Image 1 (tube, rainbow, N blue to C red):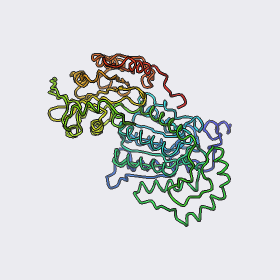
Image 2: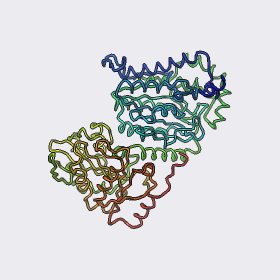
Image 3: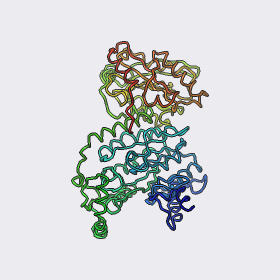
Image 4: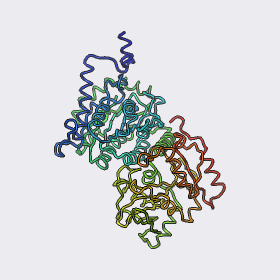
Length: 569
């Protein structure tokens, strides 16, 4: 009976044995994370906020980060999931939205499971693929459920991923995801078992990659969450060479103190003999995991020396596989307007030359304008808007479909306006309030290898719907003759639709999208494109320009039905 209970509650698999005092220790850890997050959010007790002077902006709780525990069982060295406890308390006591970023080498399955259907929590986990590593979860297509669909983000990385590929992934994903979610606070888990010396994983980061994780979390907190940031510990099994340096680096960044170049001599003298006593066991563990770094090195510096980490022989193929994974995550989870503002790679575009042609001598004025009379008032339609003009305008409060907040929507429009390979058309009031936008931008990585393929995205403020603004603005944006040389497509994704605001179910909304674009020559196409094939209500519409070469059109149509390369992600 005792064995059955141990099995039921996760204490019989060898990783998480039942130990005396287990409850007291892990409950204190959970309490520490709860207090840390409540303090940053100003929650002294339920529904009560502290003053600005009393509220810390950052808290580091190194004992926290037990991300594998489930509500009813222990798992993966984790008894109580302190992260889920702390976030659940904030959800109960406030209206805040929480972004959780998990940098541990193992997938944060327990936290994802706790909030899989919760739209107020976005979980982002960058981890080694579960093909070879516990807990075996964290696939790209684990996207969330119900109202939480699209708020579970997984980036499974290839074994032996090194710094450059890892940093490329966080640079391509974190900022667009944060902008689209608009969190109030960031909780990050900093398991340092991503390091090349860690004996329990296959990843190959050095302190440079770990430092990039830390700096990214800190910068995002200040840029988008008014500085609110709770950092937690997590996994890390090279206890002498990696964990102390990684978490000292985290505290240095969080407290904005300079990090010395060298480790203290007294610290090295104390702990190097301890490491030497277990060096042979570490060597065996490293060999089992297939790692080839210089194991006989005890570091004297906070940063690693490159010569201690031989380059992986499969570096190019590993980086290529990771780029494909990142491209798929961006394609599935980053809204179109946000992707356009943060392109993965700049491409040469015919729109760049068209923009120059329409703005001779560096003119900072839109190329075309048009008056639109509505029942509410007059609107001005303008296309190819330069940044100097967009900067002078403000965004209506009803513009929140892609960036959640009007001020961030304005930042997105500024970013798009700065890109010479994009076209931005806007509708604004005479007082300078933007109430609608249409963007044209090169197709993302899914369409790689196809020329002159552009994605069209449209948004109209919820305060200006039902007035014909969408159809007039879209028609205005697409009436340029130069677009007949291009293939235009639009993705109708049900998780971005404001069905509640319009009082429509997703299928009625789908019909509305088809009518809107169909009036301008767009046709619905069947496709294996990942977003569309995931949900029956989603739709892909395309318009092939009259002057598009037949071979180019054929390649586009073939791509629509090509098999998506997502197996093994």
